[in-house]
Length: 423
Image (tube, rainbow, N blue to C red; front, side):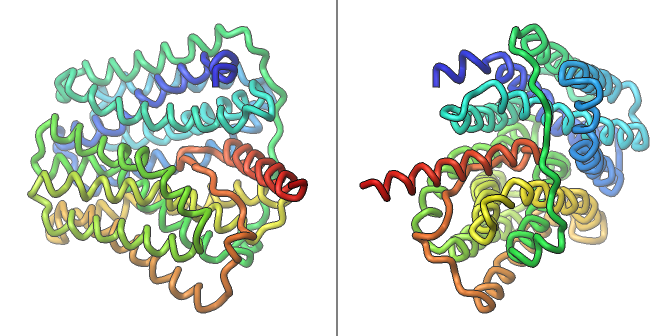
């Protein structure tokens, strides 16, 4: 662990600050949009735009890095993020915000691609798994911490946007001033989506549905909270609760995953998350019921992402795992683009109002449960002793980070098998 921190502390510190900035801007826009009188539909388009940009960035960033290198790409994209954040309160118009969100989504995706390949190169094989775990923990802690900063300034003013911009601006200083050499860059070409679906229908359908759930949480959670009349302090705690649930339950559910039929666990976890959504929908005005609902949703859906990836790997040849990761991220991204748009319509006046936020999450999770039940009737389960290891994966990871996770998990499984054979 100390060796990982010694080799990658600058990158981890910079990414932590970036995640605080990203988490803050997502929440503050939902609150400020309500103050500016933007309609729910307008806010849903604005929030969806981030995922459009993110999807494009994950595809184009690798080519940018190959052409001009990690340092230039990282510095340029982080500078654009900082600029857009400071422009939000100056250009309070839905079209301007939509364009800004597309650009910020693109830039964050490129920054993540750069950071993940850099992290992979800065650690040796023996410590790569620890480095990835630290990286994902830093990401989640950064987003949780960001919610507290919502209380620092008046959301109707400039202060909170300035704080987010400053955090992003200083985040790349430790990285760019680090003496670590820039790595060579290479990625695996993803396999076709049809081939991936044929190998794991549940993995693909589940990833698409979860994309809608994640984007609804990240993009429309603050919009819901503002519509529901929560105070700034309540919005801060409510949004943080989603991510705290993910932090607390990711590893316990991973431990269980390696000891039981994964499809059964996917079904159970999806069902618990769906029940949390029903609670939220029925008690939209009861703040202290909404918190356990948010905890259940966040705590179930983030491990579901890792469970679906592990389930898919159980049907893949080891050589195809890295290639499949890019397709899984792309499928998740498609669902993420649609999530806020549908949520915004459901939350609109004359439809379901604020409770539409939880309605969409519940429908998507119960659809996943139903499809998991269907798939259990179509194909026999992989015996537990033949399944690969569960790897905790963040939904924020790009295809580059997912490839590294796949490689680390496979290498760990190989070492474990060799030890068992020798004993």
